Image (cartoon, rainbow, N blue to C red; front, side, top):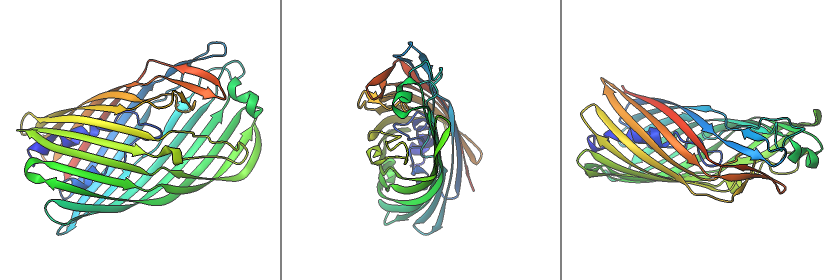
Length: 364
Protein backbone atom coordinates (compact mmCIF):
# COMPACT_ATOMS: atom_id res chain seq x y z
CA UNK A 1 0.00 0.00 0.00
CA UNK A 2 2.74 2.46 0.94
CA UNK A 3 4.67 1.75 -2.25
CA UNK A 4 1.69 2.12 -4.57
CA UNK A 5 0.17 5.13 -2.80
CA UNK A 6 3.36 7.18 -2.87
CA UNK A 7 2.03 9.55 -5.58
CA UNK A 8 -1.41 10.17 -4.11
CA UNK A 9 -0.69 13.61 -2.65
CA UNK A 10 0.86 14.81 -5.91
CA UNK A 11 -2.18 13.57 -7.82
CA UNK A 12 -4.61 15.15 -5.39
CA UNK A 13 -2.81 18.49 -5.48
CA UNK A 14 -2.53 18.69 -9.26
CA UNK A 15 -6.17 17.69 -9.74
CA UNK A 16 -7.46 20.50 -7.50
CA UNK A 17 -5.55 23.42 -9.01
CA UNK A 18 -7.58 24.08 -12.16
CA UNK A 19 -10.54 26.43 -12.28
CA UNK A 20 -13.74 24.84 -11.00
CA UNK A 21 -17.13 24.66 -12.67
CA UNK A 22 -19.67 27.15 -11.39
CA UNK A 23 -18.33 28.61 -8.16
CA UNK A 24 -16.32 25.50 -7.21
CA UNK A 25 -12.77 26.08 -6.01
CA UNK A 26 -11.41 23.51 -3.56
CA UNK A 27 -13.50 20.58 -4.81
CA UNK A 28 -14.22 19.72 -1.13
CA UNK A 29 -11.89 16.72 -1.13
CA UNK A 30 -11.94 14.62 2.05
CA UNK A 31 -9.02 12.41 0.97
CA UNK A 32 -6.91 13.63 3.90
CA UNK A 33 -8.91 11.41 6.30
CA UNK A 34 -7.05 8.45 4.75
CA UNK A 35 -3.64 9.94 5.58
CA UNK A 36 -1.30 8.35 8.09
CA UNK A 37 -2.02 8.91 11.79
CA UNK A 38 -0.79 12.30 13.02
CA UNK A 39 -0.47 14.00 9.61
CA UNK A 40 -0.67 17.78 9.16
CA UNK A 41 -0.96 19.17 5.64
CA UNK A 42 -0.82 22.68 4.19
CA UNK A 43 -1.33 23.46 0.50
CA UNK A 44 -1.25 26.67 -1.49
CA UNK A 45 -2.26 27.24 -5.11
CA UNK A 46 -2.43 30.26 -7.39
CA UNK A 47 -4.84 30.16 -10.34
CA UNK A 48 -4.27 32.57 -13.24
CA UNK A 49 -7.14 32.60 -15.74
CA UNK A 50 -7.03 34.36 -19.10
CA UNK A 51 -10.66 35.08 -19.96
CA UNK A 52 -11.10 37.53 -22.83
CA UNK A 53 -14.05 38.44 -25.00
CA UNK A 54 -15.61 41.06 -27.25
CA UNK A 55 -18.81 42.98 -26.57
CA UNK A 56 -21.30 43.78 -29.30
CA UNK A 57 -21.40 47.50 -28.41
CA UNK A 58 -18.41 49.43 -29.80
CA UNK A 59 -16.58 46.06 -30.10
CA UNK A 60 -15.15 46.50 -26.60
CA UNK A 61 -12.41 43.98 -25.83
CA UNK A 62 -12.71 42.50 -22.34
CA UNK A 63 -10.15 40.83 -20.09
CA UNK A 64 -12.27 39.74 -17.13
CA UNK A 65 -10.40 36.88 -15.43
CA UNK A 66 -8.69 37.80 -12.16
CA UNK A 67 -6.02 35.65 -10.50
CA UNK A 68 -6.79 34.16 -7.11
CA UNK A 69 -5.20 31.89 -4.52
CA UNK A 70 -6.37 28.92 -2.44
CA UNK A 71 -5.03 27.66 0.88
CA UNK A 72 -6.04 24.36 2.49
CA UNK A 73 -5.13 23.01 5.93
CA UNK A 74 -5.70 19.40 6.96
CA UNK A 75 -5.11 17.37 10.10
CA UNK A 76 -5.66 13.65 10.61
CA UNK A 77 -5.29 11.67 13.86
CA UNK A 78 -6.47 8.26 15.07
CA UNK A 79 -8.20 8.91 18.39
CA UNK A 80 -9.01 5.26 19.16
CA UNK A 81 -8.76 1.87 17.51
CA UNK A 82 -10.55 2.18 14.16
CA UNK A 83 -11.74 5.77 14.74
CA UNK A 84 -9.98 8.65 12.95
CA UNK A 85 -10.62 12.39 13.34
CA UNK A 86 -9.98 14.76 10.46
CA UNK A 87 -10.03 18.55 10.22
CA UNK A 88 -10.15 20.41 6.90
CA UNK A 89 -10.03 24.19 6.41
CA UNK A 90 -10.57 25.34 2.83
CA UNK A 91 -12.30 27.83 0.52
CA UNK A 92 -14.96 25.77 -1.24
CA UNK A 93 -16.50 28.53 -3.38
CA UNK A 94 -15.37 31.75 -5.00
CA UNK A 95 -15.66 34.16 -7.90
CA UNK A 96 -13.42 36.95 -9.15
CA UNK A 97 -14.56 38.71 -12.33
CA UNK A 98 -14.30 42.33 -13.49
CA UNK A 99 -15.18 43.83 -16.90
CA UNK A 100 -12.98 46.70 -18.06
CA UNK A 101 -14.30 49.54 -20.20
CA UNK A 102 -16.42 52.65 -19.86
CA UNK A 103 -19.84 51.66 -18.47
CA UNK A 104 -21.49 54.36 -20.62
CA UNK A 105 -19.87 53.25 -23.88
CA UNK A 106 -19.42 49.48 -23.62
CA UNK A 107 -21.64 46.43 -23.29
CA UNK A 108 -20.62 45.33 -19.80
CA UNK A 109 -17.95 47.75 -18.55
CA UNK A 110 -17.95 47.92 -14.73
CA UNK A 111 -19.75 44.59 -14.28
CA UNK A 112 -18.01 42.29 -11.80
CA UNK A 113 -18.24 39.97 -8.82
CA UNK A 114 -16.09 39.05 -5.83
CA UNK A 115 -17.22 36.09 -3.76
CA UNK A 116 -15.20 34.64 -0.88
CA UNK A 117 -15.85 31.65 1.35
CA UNK A 118 -14.27 29.77 4.23
CA UNK A 119 -15.18 26.35 5.60
CA UNK A 120 -14.17 24.21 8.55
CA UNK A 121 -15.03 20.52 8.30
CA UNK A 122 -14.76 18.15 11.28
CA UNK A 123 -14.94 14.57 10.04
CA UNK A 124 -14.95 11.23 11.81
CA UNK A 125 -14.02 8.01 9.98
CA UNK A 126 -14.80 4.61 11.46
CA UNK A 127 -13.28 1.39 10.11
CA UNK A 128 -15.95 -1.31 10.23
CA UNK A 129 -13.33 -3.82 9.13
CA UNK A 130 -10.16 -3.81 7.02
CA UNK A 131 -12.17 -3.28 3.84
CA UNK A 132 -15.13 -1.06 4.75
CA UNK A 133 -15.25 2.31 6.48
CA UNK A 134 -17.82 5.06 6.93
CA UNK A 135 -17.30 8.75 7.49
CA UNK A 136 -19.46 11.71 8.46
CA UNK A 137 -18.94 15.24 9.63
CA UNK A 138 -20.09 18.80 10.21
CA UNK A 139 -19.18 21.77 8.01
CA UNK A 140 -19.19 25.36 9.25
CA UNK A 141 -19.19 27.68 6.27
CA UNK A 142 -19.10 31.44 5.69
CA UNK A 143 -19.86 33.29 2.44
CA UNK A 144 -19.72 36.97 1.46
CA UNK A 145 -19.92 38.75 -1.90
CA UNK A 146 -20.01 42.02 -3.81
CA UNK A 147 -21.67 42.24 -7.23
CA UNK A 148 -21.85 45.07 -9.77
CA UNK A 149 -24.06 45.08 -12.87
CA UNK A 150 -23.11 47.88 -15.25
CA UNK A 151 -22.61 48.83 -18.87
CA UNK A 152 -25.12 49.44 -21.62
CA UNK A 153 -26.58 45.92 -21.38
CA UNK A 154 -27.69 46.48 -17.78
CA UNK A 155 -28.25 50.24 -17.52
CA UNK A 156 -31.22 50.19 -19.85
CA UNK A 157 -33.10 47.52 -17.92
CA UNK A 158 -32.10 48.49 -14.37
CA UNK A 159 -32.09 52.27 -14.76
CA UNK A 160 -28.43 52.76 -13.83
CA UNK A 161 -25.47 50.90 -12.48
CA UNK A 162 -26.45 48.36 -9.82
CA UNK A 163 -24.34 47.30 -6.84
CA UNK A 164 -25.09 44.74 -4.15
CA UNK A 165 -23.09 43.96 -1.02
CA UNK A 166 -23.90 40.61 0.58
CA UNK A 167 -22.45 40.60 4.07
CA UNK A 168 -20.77 37.57 5.60
CA UNK A 169 -23.20 34.81 6.50
CA UNK A 170 -22.13 31.75 8.49
CA UNK A 171 -24.09 28.52 8.65
CA UNK A 172 -23.64 24.76 9.01
CA UNK A 173 -24.22 21.62 7.00
CA UNK A 174 -23.02 18.06 7.08
CA UNK A 175 -21.44 15.35 4.96
CA UNK A 176 -21.63 11.57 4.93
CA UNK A 177 -19.89 8.83 2.99
CA UNK A 178 -18.31 5.39 2.86
CA UNK A 179 -15.30 3.64 1.36
CA UNK A 180 -14.23 0.18 0.29
CA UNK A 181 -10.53 -0.76 0.29
CA UNK A 182 -8.19 -3.61 -0.58
CA UNK A 183 -4.92 -2.37 0.96
CA UNK A 184 -2.70 -5.00 -0.73
CA UNK A 185 -3.31 -3.43 -4.15
CA UNK A 186 -3.93 0.15 -2.94
CA UNK A 187 -7.55 -0.04 -4.10
CA UNK A 188 -10.01 2.41 -2.62
CA UNK A 189 -13.45 3.51 -3.76
CA UNK A 190 -14.97 6.30 -1.66
CA UNK A 191 -18.16 8.31 -1.99
CA UNK A 192 -19.14 11.48 -0.11
CA UNK A 193 -22.38 13.46 -0.15
CA UNK A 194 -22.43 17.10 0.95
CA UNK A 195 -25.73 18.67 2.01
CA UNK A 196 -26.70 22.15 0.88
CA UNK A 197 -26.09 24.87 3.46
CA UNK A 198 -28.80 27.46 4.08
CA UNK A 199 -27.74 31.09 4.47
CA UNK A 200 -29.47 34.36 5.29
CA UNK A 201 -27.36 37.46 4.72
CA UNK A 202 -27.76 41.20 5.25
CA UNK A 203 -27.54 43.16 2.00
CA UNK A 204 -27.17 46.70 0.72
CA UNK A 205 -28.37 47.51 -2.81
CA UNK A 206 -27.68 50.73 -4.71
CA UNK A 207 -28.87 51.93 -8.13
CA UNK A 208 -27.01 54.80 -9.80
CA UNK A 209 -25.18 55.38 -6.51
CA UNK A 210 -28.39 55.76 -4.48
CA UNK A 211 -29.08 53.31 -1.66
CA UNK A 212 -32.26 51.47 -2.63
CA UNK A 213 -32.58 48.98 0.21
CA UNK A 214 -30.68 49.00 3.50
CA UNK A 215 -30.79 46.98 5.57
CA UNK A 216 -32.13 44.20 3.37
CA UNK A 217 -31.73 40.44 3.55
CA UNK A 218 -31.36 37.64 1.04
CA UNK A 219 -31.80 33.91 1.60
CA UNK A 220 -29.83 31.40 -0.46
CA UNK A 221 -28.16 27.99 -0.25
CA UNK A 222 -24.72 26.81 -1.22
CA UNK A 223 -25.31 23.69 -3.31
CA UNK A 224 -25.39 20.05 -2.36
CA UNK A 225 -22.65 18.00 -4.00
CA UNK A 226 -21.41 14.45 -4.50
CA UNK A 227 -17.80 13.25 -4.81
CA UNK A 228 -16.76 9.79 -6.04
CA UNK A 229 -13.06 8.90 -5.82
CA UNK A 230 -11.24 5.80 -7.04
CA UNK A 231 -7.66 4.54 -6.94
CA UNK A 232 -5.90 1.24 -7.55
CA UNK A 233 -2.47 -0.12 -8.23
CA UNK A 234 -2.10 -1.21 -11.86
CA UNK A 235 1.58 -2.26 -11.89
CA UNK A 236 4.58 -2.21 -9.62
CA UNK A 237 4.99 1.33 -8.25
CA UNK A 238 2.15 2.63 -10.47
CA UNK A 239 -1.20 4.01 -9.29
CA UNK A 240 -4.32 4.83 -11.29
CA UNK A 241 -6.82 7.38 -9.94
CA UNK A 242 -10.18 8.70 -11.13
CA UNK A 243 -12.80 11.01 -9.66
CA UNK A 244 -16.22 12.48 -10.35
CA UNK A 245 -17.84 15.53 -8.74
CA UNK A 246 -21.33 16.91 -9.22
CA UNK A 247 -22.45 20.24 -7.74
CA UNK A 248 -26.15 21.13 -7.87
CA UNK A 249 -25.91 24.82 -8.73
CA UNK A 250 -29.41 24.92 -10.20
CA UNK A 251 -30.59 24.98 -6.57
CA UNK A 252 -28.65 28.20 -5.91
CA UNK A 253 -30.72 31.37 -6.33
CA UNK A 254 -29.59 34.74 -4.98
CA UNK A 255 -32.49 37.20 -5.44
CA UNK A 256 -32.02 40.54 -3.64
CA UNK A 257 -35.15 42.55 -2.81
CA UNK A 258 -34.72 45.49 -5.18
CA UNK A 259 -33.20 43.71 -8.16
CA UNK A 260 -35.80 40.91 -7.81
CA UNK A 261 -33.90 38.59 -10.15
CA UNK A 262 -31.21 35.94 -9.74
CA UNK A 263 -27.64 37.23 -9.48
CA UNK A 264 -26.13 33.76 -10.03
CA UNK A 265 -28.09 31.76 -12.64
CA UNK A 266 -25.76 28.74 -12.90
CA UNK A 267 -26.35 25.25 -14.26
CA UNK A 268 -25.42 22.07 -12.38
CA UNK A 269 -21.70 21.37 -12.72
CA UNK A 270 -19.74 18.15 -13.26
CA UNK A 271 -16.03 17.33 -13.23
CA UNK A 272 -14.19 14.16 -14.23
CA UNK A 273 -10.50 13.45 -13.58
CA UNK A 274 -8.19 10.60 -14.54
CA UNK A 275 -4.61 10.33 -13.31
CA UNK A 276 -1.56 8.09 -13.14
CA UNK A 277 1.08 8.25 -10.39
CA UNK A 278 4.50 6.62 -10.64
CA UNK A 279 7.14 6.01 -7.98
CA UNK A 280 10.68 6.58 -9.32
CA UNK A 281 12.64 6.03 -6.10
CA UNK A 282 12.12 5.79 -2.35
CA UNK A 283 11.90 9.58 -2.18
CA UNK A 284 10.58 10.75 -5.56
CA UNK A 285 7.34 10.13 -7.43
CA UNK A 286 5.32 11.96 -10.07
CA UNK A 287 1.86 12.15 -11.58
CA UNK A 288 -0.12 13.24 -14.61
CA UNK A 289 -3.83 14.08 -14.29
CA UNK A 290 -6.44 14.93 -16.93
CA UNK A 291 -9.51 17.03 -16.04
CA UNK A 292 -12.75 17.43 -17.96
CA UNK A 293 -15.91 19.44 -17.41
CA UNK A 294 -18.64 18.95 -20.05
CA UNK A 295 -20.06 21.95 -21.85
CA UNK A 296 -23.53 23.17 -21.01
CA UNK A 297 -25.68 25.95 -22.43
CA UNK A 298 -23.57 28.27 -24.59
CA UNK A 299 -25.44 31.26 -23.14
CA UNK A 300 -24.04 32.01 -19.69
CA UNK A 301 -24.07 34.68 -17.00
CA UNK A 302 -21.59 37.53 -17.54
CA UNK A 303 -20.31 36.70 -14.04
CA UNK A 304 -19.07 33.30 -15.31
CA UNK A 305 -18.26 33.61 -19.03
CA UNK A 306 -16.81 30.13 -19.68
CA UNK A 307 -18.39 26.84 -20.70
CA UNK A 308 -16.67 23.56 -19.88
CA UNK A 309 -13.00 22.74 -19.45
CA UNK A 310 -10.24 20.36 -20.53
CA UNK A 311 -7.01 20.38 -18.54
CA UNK A 312 -3.79 18.57 -17.78
CA UNK A 313 -1.80 18.65 -14.54
CA UNK A 314 1.74 17.45 -13.88
CA UNK A 315 2.81 16.89 -10.27
CA UNK A 316 5.77 15.61 -8.29
CA UNK A 317 6.29 14.49 -4.69
CA UNK A 318 9.54 14.37 -2.73
CA UNK A 319 10.19 13.05 0.78
CA UNK A 320 12.61 14.92 3.04
CA UNK A 321 12.90 13.30 6.47
CA UNK A 322 9.45 13.48 8.09
CA UNK A 323 8.16 15.96 5.49
CA UNK A 324 6.56 15.21 2.13
CA UNK A 325 6.62 18.06 -0.40
CA UNK A 326 4.35 18.00 -3.47
CA UNK A 327 4.21 20.51 -6.30
CA UNK A 328 2.35 20.79 -9.57
CA UNK A 329 1.30 22.86 -12.55
CA UNK A 330 -2.02 22.81 -14.40
CA UNK A 331 -3.00 24.10 -17.84
CA UNK A 332 -6.69 24.17 -18.73
CA UNK A 333 -8.46 25.11 -21.96
CA UNK A 334 -11.71 26.90 -21.11
CA UNK A 335 -14.76 26.37 -23.31
CA UNK A 336 -16.19 29.16 -25.47
CA UNK A 337 -19.30 30.95 -24.23
CA UNK A 338 -21.59 33.91 -24.83
CA UNK A 339 -22.32 36.22 -21.90
CA UNK A 340 -26.02 36.96 -22.27
CA UNK A 341 -28.14 39.76 -20.79
CA UNK A 342 -31.69 39.72 -22.13
CA UNK A 343 -30.55 38.71 -25.62
CA UNK A 344 -27.59 41.08 -25.67
CA UNK A 345 -24.35 39.07 -25.87
CA UNK A 346 -20.58 39.26 -25.58
CA UNK A 347 -18.44 36.50 -27.13
CA UNK A 348 -15.70 34.75 -25.13
CA UNK A 349 -13.41 32.40 -27.11
CA UNK A 350 -9.93 30.87 -26.93
CA UNK A 351 -9.50 31.17 -23.16
CA UNK A 352 -7.33 29.25 -20.72
CA UNK A 353 -6.02 29.01 -17.16
CA UNK A 354 -2.52 28.35 -15.78
CA UNK A 355 -2.12 27.29 -12.14
CA UNK A 356 0.66 26.37 -9.73
CA UNK A 357 0.46 24.59 -6.39
CA UNK A 358 2.60 23.46 -3.45
CA UNK A 359 1.71 21.10 -0.61
CA UNK A 360 3.65 20.12 2.53
CA UNK A 361 2.68 17.18 4.74
CA UNK A 362 4.37 16.41 8.04
CA UNK A 363 3.82 13.39 10.29
CA UNK A 364 4.03 13.66 14.07
